Image 1: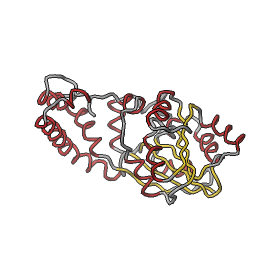
Image 2: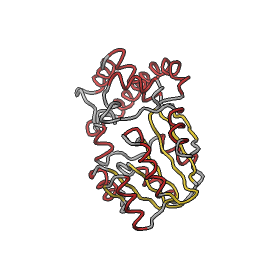
Image 3: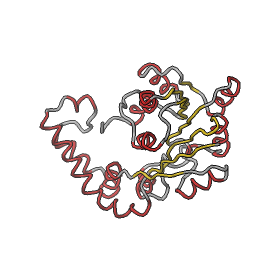
Length: 265
């Protein structure tokens, strides 16, 4: 919901649905069951869906609040506050191996990506799969993000990947990777609007439907049906207007996110 902080969505259990990068996993992964580990599992929404699909799910994350959400909201007991290397050491001691290991929007945070991937490989069964996603450094979407926000720089993101850079990293470890770009213009349109016009359009939309400057989940739910429809219509119109130039500018760069997967022997 617009107006609700991103931290709350991902760490306080407000998110209910998986993202497009997760949907790509269910679309392309050839497995329908098996033991799955999600590194950087966050609030566990992806693990919840993977469990529904037939996987035995495990997850690790640095954030204790996220793991609490996994365990208390979704009942995901095999989730732990551990680093990848700590969990790899645990798996070695326990003889624990996985059919598939995922890490969505995690690789760009690693200051030692080779060591990270080696730890991932050590936990896989022969013929197991690696899958995940990273921001595409060549996309217009992420160019906008870097202009507006600072989170795409250290100490948050240590690495920027293009599809070529991603392939080179995996091939250096003897892995053949398949990459599927994800285009998300509806998310990029507000960024372009902010860059061109500041936050004027957002303020107009919010003021048009409520006296409060910020629309959070509570006061959004209190709006009349007419005002909710007006709010969504104005947002949709904004996204259409600003999506067209993004489509033109970003088309050669394949979109803002790169989903990848590979089989490891």
